Length: 66
Image 1 (cartoon, one colour):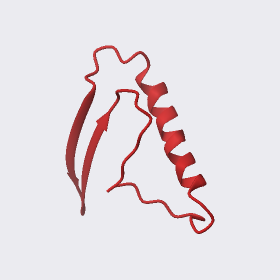
Image 2: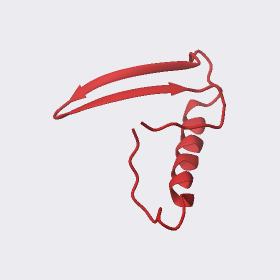
Image 3: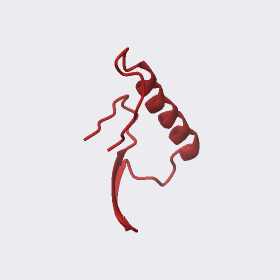
Image 4: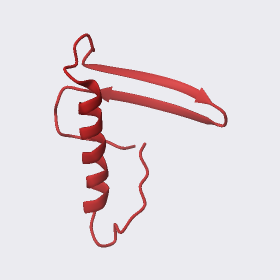
């Protein structure tokens, strides 16, 4: 889950921009995606938190938060 605080009472524009920036950074980091599976997941316990991550790099322009 990604939680974002902002001026959502006005609109969700800035929250959407956060996702756009994340997607651009991820695309740049992955490069040509050679040898990378289309999707994956990871569960990591760390300190007092539990991180659950699932990612699909199919190129579809969608995001989902829980």
